[in-house]
Amino acid sequence: MALFNTPSSGNFFRPAAGQYIGRFVGHSVGPMGKDFGDGKPPQEQVRWTWELFNLDRTPVLHEGQPAKVDALSSKSTGPRSKGGSWFAAHLKRPLKEGEDMELASQECIGKEVMLIYTDPDGNGVRLQAVLTFS
Image (cartoon, rainbow, N blue to C red; front, side, top):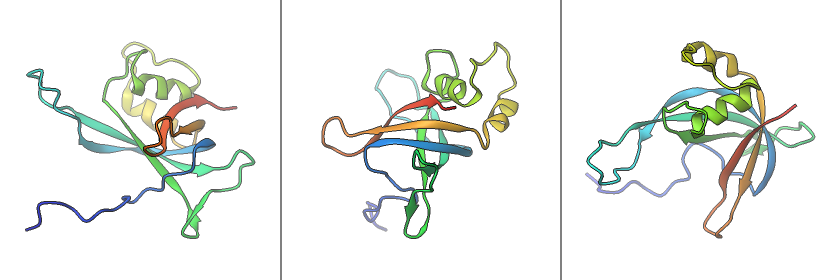
């Protein structure tokens, strides 16, 4: 059995740095987070998936097919968390205390947001921000 996986970019496309429209597809279980050595066990993450469009609403294509992109957040949904701010961008409102997160997740499907990708240190493009798009 091999110790390492064969290098791969995974199933998802990584766009060039820039601004795009992301149409939300759904949430899924992501990989375990990092072990920070603080005695707390690594936490499961959430994978967010979007279909990717140029700002003129033409689909971004990857290998002849509409591109999908993904990003990870923790399961935290507080107002200062990545997940909480991403929900707010999709729903165009902050989450309410005690809100049913399954319903909030379903409400996000099909919503469009602005996805901003940057390459700040020259080590590869990353999702920098998920913002409300109108």
